[in-house]
Amino acid sequence: MNNKGQAALEYLMTYGWALIVIAIVVGVLVFIVSSPAGVVCNSSDPAKIVVKASNLEANVATGTDMGKIILTNLTGGDISSVYISSSGAIATTDQAYNASVSSGDTIEVTATSAAVETYSTSNLMVGYTDFAALDRNVTITCSGPITVTT
Image 1 (cartoon, helix red, strand yellow):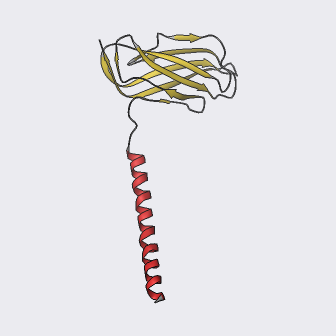
Image 2 (image 1 turned 180 degrees about the horizontal axis):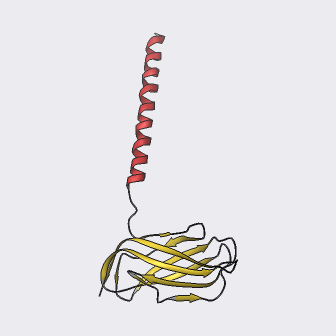
Image 3 (image 1 turned 45 degrees about the vertical axis):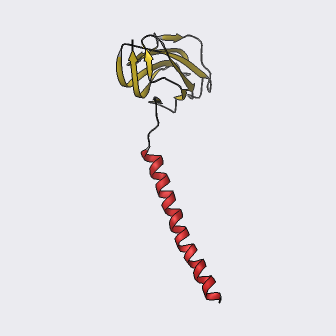
């Protein structure tokens, strides 16, 4: 009588572990293969200036507000003379921030749409003077389908 219970338990343990392994492999594949929808922004030097958040719209009219990109200073000290320029779908109208930005503080960039076209990537150049009085540059690359219409 005990043999039937042992066989059933062994069957459940063997195939249960196999199902768990299959579920983990499928979950990892879905996570790796799937790409995020919309416009995604990344920093060329995330150890210095990181993109904390971005909510750029993928379909906008020329000259309208596309959304905001929020950058965080992770340089370890205050930065000054922050200057932001852009290319591609994003037109920031070259914003200059003369005030210093403390370590851990954020910089909010309002993005407006540029010329009528469909873009796959756009760049935002961030120039600043770090706490050691050295001029630095970081490129923020926004990838995703951005369509600018009239």
